[in-house]
Length: 261
Length: 253
Image (cartoon, rainbow over all chains, first blue to last red; front, side):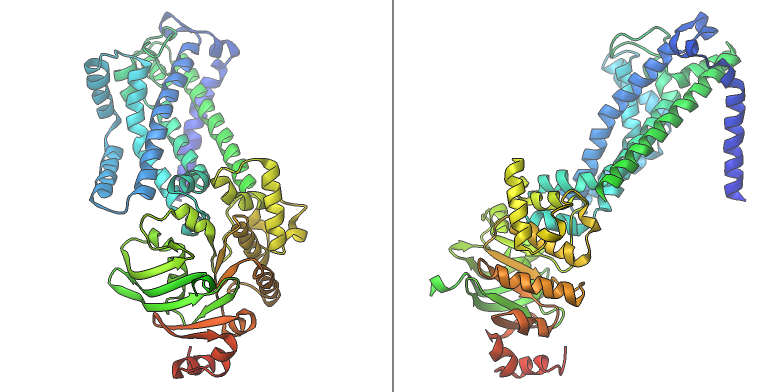
């Protein structure tokens, strides 16, 4: 019953958005920049903004998160310090995104004087996805059998060699899944992004340009009553992108796993 | 006398936290012999093997007293180069542990760690190691398939080949046939006889029959103590100690 209602809700949402949004999706909708606040034209600059913001978030957040997970699993034993880091991560996971937005606004935008920009927003999102990346990476590193590590050491491997040649390749599918979840969260985030990356419709030219992501565009179009038609179009495009990314990533992961076994 | 011993263990005791796993062990292992370390479970056999190549370092809270020498090297010295030591003393574990990569990459793993990356050289190493482990003919046409697809016996011989690729002086085998059928066991024992020509082997057998079949000399361990050691025929036919006799004749164990 529960499972059925989950599927029902999902289908309802998809149906509603695609019914309203699909008719708007022409090639020009993807390739033209918005005109008249988004009432006319397409969503090209918001697609670029979304991609740039997500890229910064992942490029900063993923290595930091995976590094933390490696440190926690391979370089420390259970201790006060590791418990504290883990507690901090769990707390971070529970912080509402608007609080991240506020923090990013005060710290990156104002204090570090980065302004509303891709960089401010990306760094804020990086902090927001950190808990997800850390915990999924930690779980998949934990799942690598102890015997693999023992073999690597017994063949004269150093700790670093063991981590990079045995542990990480085995944990990669899990780590990748965590990063994928984070991509989804970054693309979908609104509150934290408005406060840190702004809502400019102008095409970004550098990391310090303000941008508007697709989610923010959707929000503003609907909230300000600018154009429900364009809002649904943006929503449908957003869903399609997330779907395509997920399918491609799943295909890559499966290929990688099949290659190894 | 030092010339006649490859490994000399003197007054060696080993502790996991406060639990003593080995008590005051003294014995010598000669070059190019198969020495078998046997005894019931929890008698300290694996601990002894892992002490020889310092895999015990991976476990937290262990301590030891006494010394172990490999030729002139003090194995227990905290400053000893572990990478070098573990290349000289290779180890095969009780269950086959191929890494989740191709057969070739499994063999090349060790040499690559020390910077041997030339494909030609790695090919030579792989062929030689696989021939030594009597696996070459079975896998030569599928070196790039996953090692996980081999049978258990083939996997274990692959693990032996992987160690041999480093050209060790001593080979530690911890119940290498425990998960294998009699035919695979026979082929591994055959492999050991071949290997004895070039290196020293320390074997924890998975049963007493295997110890008597393959070993030159044997040491009987009980509760972390070396009860007695000597030539295999003596240990298995006229042991000096009552406990050895009881174990060998199957009165306990």
